[in-house]
Length: 383
Ligand code: NDP
Ligand code: MG
Image 1 (cartoon, rainbow, N blue to C red):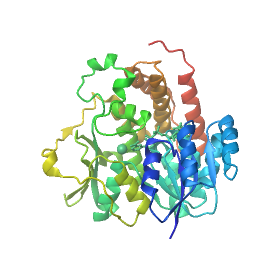
Image 2 (image 1 turned 45 degrees about the vertical axis):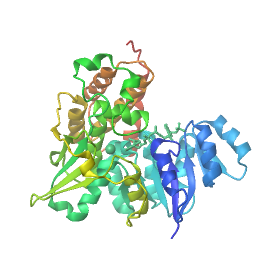
Image 3 (image 1 turned 90 degrees about the vertical axis):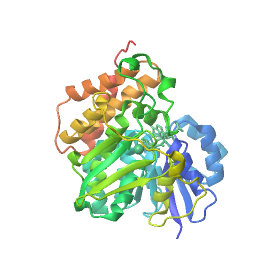
Image 4 (image 1 turned 90 degrees about the horizontal axis):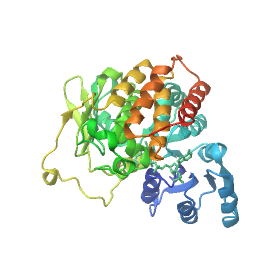
């Protein structure tokens, strides 16, 4: 059976790896793609995969591409992204590899269309997990995680039932600055933050790994995906990134998922699920790694992880506030407008300043997302 793929964020780190896996394999048809600004790569993807529909960020880029590809339908901006997610019939798979809360509305629209979701865009579940998971159940669609730790948990759960879980443990490499003290973080720059020891990823998630906000987003993501309380979701420092996650069941048996740190493995798992197919990737040889290390997470070293637990437990709009403040702060940092440690200060202040709203609607979380971001981005920042 042909799997129809609707791929948001085709030019990104995850998007490119999705296309690499699909390339040359029968059984997939890329029906639509989206990208934001990377016209050069976007063009190549359109020429190779011949999607019916393409969404780009800007109107002018859409006009330029229309001239080059007269048979392709185009859109732009938020509406274009929504159309790319919902284009065509009601079957197929939305692969959401956009970065940030921009991925939320397209995911909701695709679920309403009863389209299955392969989700890399963790921000979607952080901002609106309380709204999305019930929608997934009601629509009867499958939502599979692409995030490596969550793909790992999903695979571990093949060994037991949800109600038999006693703990979920997500590992963290520690990111670019894992060997630095907090005092040494004062002067680190953008280039330094983008040098992740184990993974090659987009800029935002690489910075999130250095602040540990990424693990914060991931515990909230895990809470929603697997319906497990925060007290049962733990994190562990594991510099080798060989064990991605572990599930302890109530009989004290622990199942772990291991692989080399290569995102193609969880992406391939999601694309082919429920089948497992062969590939040519290098084997994980534990005898070559020789030693694996695990350390207790240091919450004082990584206050944004601690804060994610607080925001997650508070629920309501607080995870959306945490996420929006983090997205805005990382953008400021990447543009050289604030220092690395300001990211923490900004997110802490945003969460402290906000009064919670319980059981928010989708419109409410989207409004909060916009307001928190614009407040932070429009402030005058002096480094
Ligand atoms: P990238 O920055 O590499 O790619 C992001 C993609 O989204 C690009 O195609 C980009 O377009 C597009 N994009 C950026 N901003 C917008 C916007 N406002 N509206 C629409 N499209 C936009 O990110 P990653 O691939 O690293 O990450 C994607 C998601 O997957 C994130 O949520 C991340 O947390 C998650 N993830 C990533 C992992 C990884 O290994 N990279 C691992 C686990 C999770 P363009 O390039 O054309 O500007
Ligand atoms: Mg991850």
